[in-house]
Length: 180
Image (cartoon, helix red, strand yellow):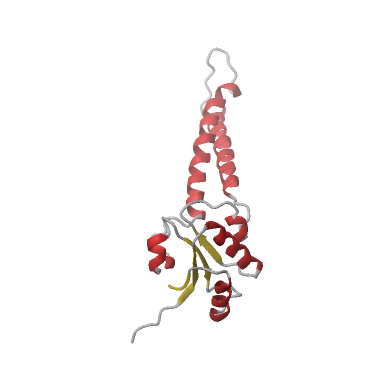
């Protein structure tokens, strides 16, 4: 006995980015929240039409920079003033100007590393498989000239018949059921 495939959502294909933005804006206005749009290039206004909020990526970069700066400064202060104090030429043990270059370098390094890892985690990379890859037209056109809007079945408003009817009202070139 074969298991029947489950539905991931409904995908509508559009001819232009303007149609995609208009459909996304209409879908969000009608209460759909679990939806995603696919385009071969960035489209102005698409993220706002989908209802995306501000990203936390800048705060991740800032956090990495602050941790790097404080960690580098603490490491130098602890090794020079507490753990292994050496009086060289009568200079003070805690001479902050000489700690600045290393603290700055660690600020940049930790910010870049934590930002890179945070961006990968937030974007769910690497993701070698996604259900939209099951749609033949998506595989052929997504990276060249296709504009797609997918409403996921996990959306509270999702009903197969009503959602299909809604997508038909946005005048797509076709509508495809996306299986998991």
